[in-house]
Image (cartoon, rainbow, N blue to C red; front, side):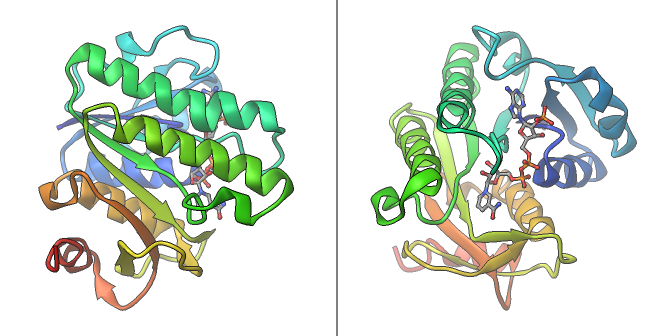
Length: 217
Ligand SMILES: NC(=O)c1ccc[n+]([C@@H]2O[C@H](COP(=O)([O-])OP(=O)(O)OC[C@H]3O[C@@H](n4cnc5c(N)ncnc54)[C@H](OP(=O)(O)O)[C@@H]3O)[C@@H](O)[C@H]2O)c1
């Protein structure tokens, strides 16, 4: 598969690109700074230079992909405006490009709490509202989407063991390495199409955690 990961130098994204390249996919990472290109090449990925905020369209980057992943984010130090232009606007532009280029598969990294942004105040509310609006847009775009909502990200080593749940409102940590592994598996697990699920560290091997999501539906 040819997979374009937006936010390609992010901490989850680099781990994901490495996994994709190792299994033989063409792993392309969209980055806005050419200085980051060597870090992508070092994990076997192909750097693609583009800017989620300042490029009018992402069509040229998405062209030729079999799937896209949105793993970008404005980050905790950013203000409300960049949460709208990156976390929301970037995800929207990626969905528009996927539709325009005929790419059906879209996996979006969202966040726990996005089902109820108003439950928190200040910058967390702005962040979660941007995530919620992005999720809604991608859900309504008519794509084969999956929305992954991780808990609090850690840099602990991956375990390959997670808890994935369609019941929203959970809390807990999850290593970025396991989020990346879940994203990689989600891309090849059709049972996840159309789902929004929360993700935490847990005790279930990733392939089984994902197929179990639809077992009771
Ligand atoms: N922290 C948490 O506990 C938590 C929990 C749940 C979900 N999440 C979400 O998980 C996602 C990934 O997290 P992470 O830790 O891997 O994020 P990260 O390391 O902060 O990576 C985010 C990436 O987005 C890129 N980006 C920002 N603006 C861009 C633009 N205009 N064009 C292209 N790329 C741009 C950044 O690139 P630059 O280097 O150019 O800035 C950066 O590489 C984020 O969406 C985050 O909100 C986080």
